[in-house]
Length: 264
Image (cartoon, rainbow, N blue to C red; front, side):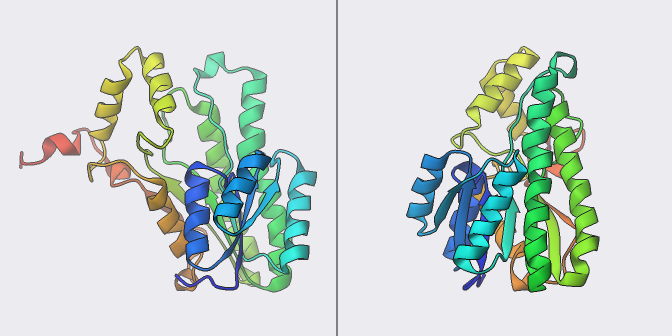
C-alpha cells in the first residue's frame, strides 16, 4: 500500500497491536504519530519508526484535542486515525465495581469518541480522511461484559459516523481481531480467564486454539495488514463496515474445526 505523504495517528500505539499497526503504516510510507498514555514508551516506538510520540490520555477530551491540534500544527494535516487504545478487566458482571465499569467505558468508548470527534473536524475541512476503530468479535463471552459493551458502543459509533462523514469523503470502518496468540502478551489473559473458569491455563489455551479453523493465532501483524488495506486508496469505496481478522473463528460452530478435519 502507498501511504506516502499521509499522516497517521495511532492511539495506544506504543506496544502490541497498536505498535504493529504503526509499524505497518510507517512501512507503507505514512508519517506515524504514536499517541499513548505511556510517554516514555511512545517516544521509544516513535524513534524506532522515525515518527512522533505524543503522550495522550484518551479519557480526557482536552488531551485528545491537544493531540490533534499539535499534529495538524506540526505536520499540516491528519489523514488516518486508528483508535486502538483500550483496556480489559475480566470479572463476573456482578463483581464489577462502578470504577471498573467507568474505567473501561472511559478508555474504550469515550476515548474513541473523543478521538473521532477531534479528527473528524480536521478531516471534514480537508474533505478526506480514514478512521479505523478496533473492536472485538467476542460478543457473549463470559467475564467480559464491560469490555464487550464498550466495543459494541464503538461499533455503533462507527456506523453512525460513516454516514455522517461520507459527504466529506471520510470513511469510517472497524477491524475486529481474533484471538491474539501467546508470545504477544496474551499469557496474562489466558491465565486470568482459565482461573475464572477453574481450568489449567495451558489446557484452556489449547482448547481455544482448536476453535480457530486456520489453526493458528491471530498476530498483531495480521491486524495491521487489514488496517493498512482499509486506509488505502484501494478501499476508498468502503465505509461503515467491520472486518473480522479471526482465522475463521467468527463462523465456528459446535464442532471444533481442527478436530473435524479428516472426519468428512
